[in-house]
Structures are given as structure tokens and as C-alpha cells.
Amino acid sequence: MKIDGRSINRAKLQERRIEAVRRVQAGEAPTAVARDMGLYTNRIFIWLAAYRSGGWDALRARKATGRPKRLGEKQIRWIYDTVTTKNPLQFKLPFALWTRAQIRTLIAQRFSVKLSLVSVGRLLAQLGLTCQRPLFRAYQQDRSLVERWLKEEFPKIRARAKREEAEIFFEDESGVRSDFHSGTTWAPKGQTPVVRVTGQRFSLNMISAVSPRGEMRFMVVRGGVGADVFINFLKRLIHGQRRPIFLIVDGHPSHRSKKVKAYVESLQGKLRLFFLPPYSPELNPDELVWNHVKNNGVGRTLVHSPADLMRAIVGRLRYLQKTPAMIRSFFQHPETCYAACR
Image (cartoon, rainbow, N blue to C red):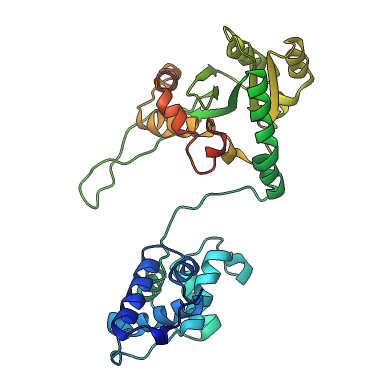
């Protein structure tokens, strides 16, 4: 039910205006603030425009001071909706990510209003928008398949695993090169630090599988990961396992090969393979293993030889294997929490 502002005394109305603007600036969506406070969404943008024109005084009963506003509530709402729901390429802008410069250009084209980069940044902050590193998704990804996996396919796999008393594991492969590095270090201002590393390049491939209960199996190999290597990993995975394993993998050709299919069938139900939707690595908790190994292990280690690289990788993987709580945390990520234990 919407609240009629005419029925609220002046002091209370001022408090509501200020509260609404502060909540939006703190990062809440204007639509969510309006719904929670019983307001029309358009009213939120009117108050945001008034605040931009005259600060907090503009939200009080007395007349606001300062220069006249250059963007009204309708323009500000359009800017908010555009940045949060549109892609710059839709407006024939040269870059696929929103920047202050691109937003400034768009405002000038749309409303014939010229703002500085500082003013654009201030406007975005007032709208509760912050500069963030985006998550990239393959344009080939079929979102309908992802939704079906989350709502239908995986719940069926989970129910079947419960009936058959099977363990669910997620598997993935990744490679790491000797010249990979991450992190920062301290140095005098204006003097970029230099870390001496080998100019030679060599790499290793890793295979691992993790379960929502915190279990982990891994293997590090030199060379490519084909059907034979994958089968070797499967043998290690089922070794000593008393319960059947439901292994969830991506659609890599080695996973779908005739040789792998024949091997799985020979196990007579001890191991079953299930496939993630195409181009959907974000659904696989095992992807976070590689992020940890590369950024917290190899990327912060001096690597001079293949043996150094092997020690760095195996050491970090063994650390993870002995830390079930961290493995379980990989299933708490917003996009992988669907696979956590229930």
C-alpha cells in the first residue's frame, strides 16, 4: 500500500526523504527502497534529483540553495536504468563496459548536458552504483539450459544420489604456466617494483574433483589431458570408495569419448558421469580450486624450473585436501551454493 505524503507531518516527511536517499546511496536499488517504504519509485528519483541539485537542504521544507539542477528526476532515472540493465554497445559506444567517460558521452548525446568525470562519478555514487570487476560469461551460453540445470536436472541428480547412497563430486581440469603471477608488493611511491623470474616458459596440467562434504582428489600431469589421462584419474577417484560416485563434468571431448564411456560402463554403476550445461564454468565449484591454486599458490611463488612449479602446485593442492572447510566454502559462492549439502 502506497503512503500519501500529505498525511505525514513535515518533520517525518523530511526524515523519510533523507532515509530513502541514504539507502540508495548505500547500494539498495531505488525500486527496493520504494517498495519497502511504501513509495512510488518515481518519488525516489525526484528526491535524488533534488539532492543532486541542493544537497541535504533540498530534502527539507525550505527552498534549496545552490545552482539549478541540470538533470531532472526523469533523466536520472533513465541513467540508472541504462547503466544497470543495458550494454554500452547497444548505444554504439566503443567499449563493452560502463566507464565514467562513456556515461558522460551518453548523457551529452541524450540530454545535451556536459558533465565532468568527477560529476559523473558523484552522480553514480548518489545512485548507489559502484565500480566493480564484472563476471564474464560466454555469449554462446544458453541461459535456459542453465535454469533447467539449476531447477530440474541437478535436483534430480541429488535425489538419485540420495536414493542410491552415492557421493557427488564436481571435476575439472586446468593448466598453469611458470610465468603466471598475482598479488601486489610494497615499494616506494612512483617506483614500480621488479621481481626477477625465469624467462623460460613451461606448464603443467591439473585435474581435481571436490565434493560438497569437503573431500578432494587431484592429479598433476605433464602434457595434455586426453581420454587415457582422464580414465587414470577416474581410477584414482574410485579407489577405496565404498559408495558409488556421481561425477559432474563439463562437455570436454575427452569426457565424452568412447573409451571413457566404455570404462564407466565397465564399472557397473560404481561411477556415473553427468554433464554441466555448455559454456557454464561458473556452475562448477571445482573452478574455485584453480583460482586458489593459481592466485594463492603458484602466483606468489618464485618458479625457476619445472620441479619448482610441480612443488608449488602439489603443495597447494595438498593443503586444500587437508582443509575440508575450505573445500566446503567453494560450495558457498553465490553461483555454486546450489550444489552445497542439504
